[in-house]
Length: 484
Length: 129
Image (cartoon, rainbow over all chains, first blue to last red; front, side):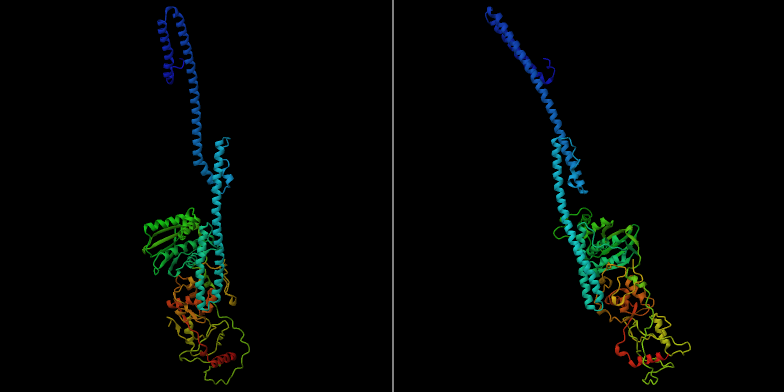
């Protein structure tokens, strides 16, 4: 009766009263039916039974209510815990695991990556989460280790190839100097040298894709002109590249090799995807943000699909690159350019060219540039060497006694020196201005002016040679080529 | 950075001026000629090269260097030493300049063209002065 107010207990309250009421009615009916003598006893018994039933009903009702309350409390507790676990699972998936992997990516060992992430409340769930996290991180760590080892092996092999190629290049250069006088051998050496450079570029590409720097380190600044020609040296079809105007800058040492390699890859793309007879134009112009190296080909140009593919390849190199992404027949070029660009702050853009092909523009940032020490390239520096002056005459040693009776058909002047004829076709000439070449001494001031001196003066004027000491330098031979 | 005063070292081979461990470019790019050098012009080691008056240096640094060096006549062998380039490469470069009409190349005398008597007469005359 006390709990009858709660809506849930209303039906049971009704049934609670129903049974005693029926018993009461039944008792009353029986009381009326039985003989009068027994009525008092029957009515007493009926009342007693009804009272007992009522008491029993009330007791059960109380017990049921208590149970129901206990059940509700337990359910609420369970729901609460379930919600907590759900939140913990979500937290694990969205917060803890990424955080642990992030730590791992930044170089933490597996143990440190997990430590402190799961709050230590001693619950079995927390422990389980930590164990799961730990095993996931360990698996990832192992995989990353395997991947890194593979990449290191790649780079290691590439480095060894690079070392051999570099040594070959030095040897080849020495041989080119040694056999420079023999055009046949020299031509063959250049051919080998070219092949060697192509191998070197491939090894550089593998090293770059393996996450290392390309090849060698340059200790000195290198003029941009030489950098561009260096890039030309490393492609197959260098003869198709026209090197036009080049801004007079030098590239700082650490950027030289990446720049050479990136331009070489772009040039290789340009020559490879344009008709074999089409020229590829290479220029470098100064811009506000640095120097823009432009590579323009007259190829078929990029379709939209090809452009997307090219830009994907560039971006692929710029972000994380998996060697598996390169596919069965790897196209290394643009991925390498993208990676080099990211590491050295180059920007690379592929645009349609006015020639119909592709114009690739690689911008070198200002801080990778410096004033060029030798405008026009390092080899031109040789030109500041003083041109050879007439060298001192070596001691000719004892000279045969002069013959006064010279009667050999040679005209002689007052000093006994042979006299040049005014006119006479080919005049004997000196073969080589050899270092030991004897130079005629200046005539005494009082010597008569020689007939024919005008011709010598004229020839000196033509040759640009002006030396009072050299009286005579006749070259009667006709020049070669277009010179008359 | 560069050995400014480094002169070609004669028989010891040219010094690698400024490039302690090799230049970035290879020689086939420096003399990037279409044909083999021998077919272009009859030039050999002792051919004398002289810059023609008013020749413009152009963009090619080696061409500029040859034009400047050849203000006075220089043999190809000497040019090769001064530029630290093999003679064949210099030959190619000079051949290009000859084709452009920027230098004159003079063929050397053949040995038979030297009258010994004349040379002896010159020596005699000189020794008498």
